[in-house]
Length: 392
Image (cartoon, rainbow, N blue to C red; front, side, top):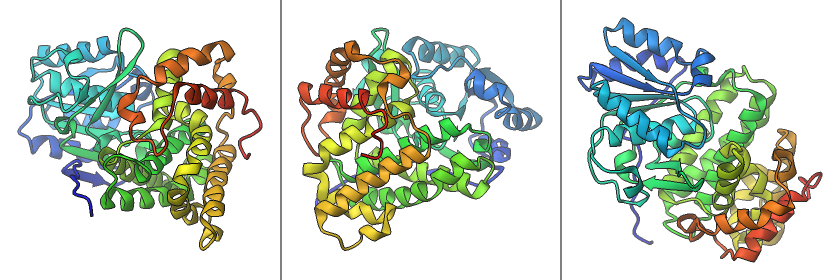
């Protein structure tokens, strides 16, 4: 067995209504001045209201930075860090989707470490200290609450990652009640994103390990069994809880066995066209799956019975094909758009998308099959012409 290292958040709380316990967790750090990092949509929906009241009721000084934007622009991350320093913050709390959690990781780091953000892009470059950090997800998708990764959009509209164990939060607090009002379209896109995390971790060419494998399998089982219900019946607490737990387990998996070509091709879609990350992944998922099939079939076959019990015992190629078809059916049933055209992308955009995807070398090296520029463009072209072919 190959040597491996596995890292994750040291403390996890999973409980409906868990946000009410935040003052107790904060007090455990001896913190008095808290910066809440969120976005205006989440705050406007009332998702931070209970936590804000509880923290202030406990006598804590609470400042709010709610300028977070999707695919966090570097300038807003730096502004958040400046706000943390100005407030004398001694603990950072994030409540929101992946963009808020990623922003909070870097705010907590930059507020303590006197380093320019652009010097941190890459793996293992952030080695300084950070403020105590608590992350509370409001979507079941990114798994950011248990990953050492923060994705930033540079001034040149390129997505870059800061990857360092220093970014792992001290607490991940999972409260299914905060996801009950999530719209079906967001539930679908973020849920597919979490499934992609599990699949790419399981098939990762770099750092694949037995712990990530087991977490990925359990994540995929939870997500695939509950995503249709969560999309159809948004107030179903059992389904919402299963999705949130599945997303976290998938996050643990890919944090230690990194994602690959689906994410590499999704990032330019988000950066250039401001498409939400989960939807960007979903739009290229089937094309990448079909592209990988000649090489990844044995691993897809191992995962196939999780999605389709009838695939158990089938020959490898047939089971792998069942797996891909089952994923396509989930995307279709959950109403995920089947074409890049649905988000305003046209034929004339494909060359730039492909060129930008090839810059994601950190991710492409993990793919089970090597991707060339021409092949990346072909996958985008397939996704552009995929209207009505989700079940193909």
